Amino acid sequence: MQNESMGIKDIPYSADSLKRIQLYIPTATVTVRVPAAKLDSVVSMLTSMSTFIESRIMKDEDKTLSYLSNALKNDGPPPVAIQPSKQATTVSVATYQDKKYDAETNRRIANMAILDDVHYATFTVQLYQPQMADQQIIVNPEKVILAGFGTEVLQSLRTGLESFSKLVIILVACWPYLLLLTIGMLIYRKVWRKKVPTPINQL
Image (cartoon, rainbow, N blue to C red; front, side):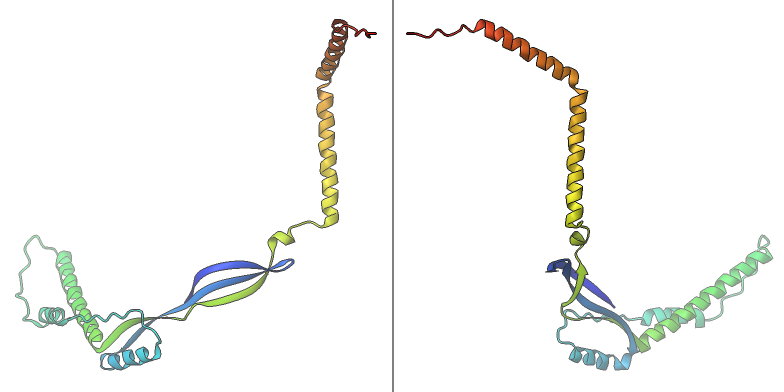
């Protein structure tokens, strides 16, 4: 069983909290094995219990030829005994017999699995409910991390003082340029006064 998320939305709830709404669809996947004779009854019961069927796929597979092939290989006439050659060793003969026995065993097990599939049907059902909503009241992180009014005022004063001190340090570091600028302005004013004629009052 799992919940498929369809989206999350946060809306304001109070001064320092939010209402989180999460939309989801509950789904459950079930694998069922029932006797083949009861398959139609089980499918009919599940169909009557559901309000909406999105899709239904039923697949039948014929295992007759596979079963007969394995049965003939295992139950057929015994193979003709072959005399081992001179190059064959005891180990190679034992290995051949082990492989032959394993192959026969695997065919018998395969036939048992086929019979089990014939007598029992396996199908998967996926159930889901309509879209649902989960509501929770959570802390608003933006409000929680904000400092108080007094702390913000002190921080602002500290920031302003630091900015002013940096400005003073910059001005102190630039004193030669300020001195040259002051001297230049004084010289410019003296030269300008000499060039400008004094106005004469007309009678």
